[in-house]
Length: 436
Image (cartoon, rainbow, N blue to C red; front, side):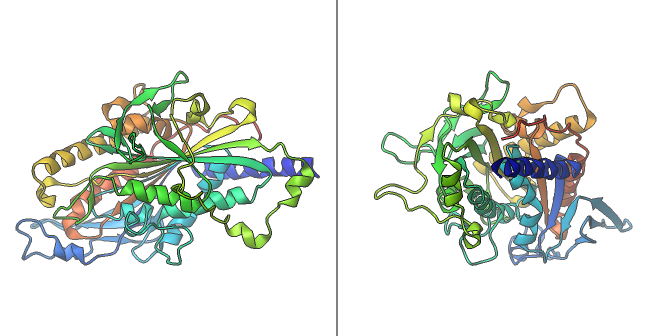
């Protein structure tokens, strides 16, 4: 019976990942946010008498978005873009998550996965990935409201899937970094007094040719609640700045990495069968209560260059039959026009470096789509850090977020052009995996 179960499990995993690969290892979705109150509240210089909230971008159907491009003295031109999925302003957070949820099964099967939100400032990237203000009120998967973003929903789904397979001993670690002004900062690092210190780190290349962050803090978590509590604490350190476009604009790229280590349990078959969870409990594991005086999630901290973490970039087989895979959840800083956002001083430098890093990301995808011999990953810390996800065997999901408003039409067209270029990237299928 046990052998038959394992054979069917391997066959299910093979069929699932064949389906995911047929859809493309890089998929691009587009989300059009609704017109919001701040579209009228924040206006650039000289826009007091001009309409700013009129919608010029429209979701034609679930695969097509149309943008009305008009200039004084010129005829109206409609531009259309096609993606694997287009979400209109009325579509829910749940609808977005349901389309990326199959990638989490691939993650549990040992494949690397990267889910990334791209778009202009104020286009809804952080809302899509995190939900409303998670740093102030952590968006825990157990919450009753329906505005949870991809990250808290993914945390809940990962631990739900783990609970469905109690015959496997699984370890989950999380790290949180931000790429700010082309430098990497560890948002979970602590100083000698155990106080979070936002330490600066460097990207290194391992002996296997993969990219790791030196000295990166990785904390073990045992539930989705623990994971999101750590994320909420890290978000309070993320660089933010009010601009004329967005009152709470993120000034850095946020990368949350969830690392999975799976090893076959040494318990007997009878023991494994005795703790099979009943159906009602498969909706998610009960959050573990931390020991007195211990912060949730602070089980342990390891360096990213320790022997245990080497080779994560390929979701490879580790010592003793372990399978290591990595899930990266990326909330990119928004592209913006300095003349529209009204930033000056240090904020202007932030804008310049954000735009440069996003341009470098576009250049990398352009080089991949054209099949060039040299891919310029090192032109930016962001692309250097995400090299394994962009050009490796990770399953990459890009969600392009755009505003419907006339005043943002230039940035909307730029974002849609980025998405169209990303769709052209073709990569080989991941290397065959040894069954667990």
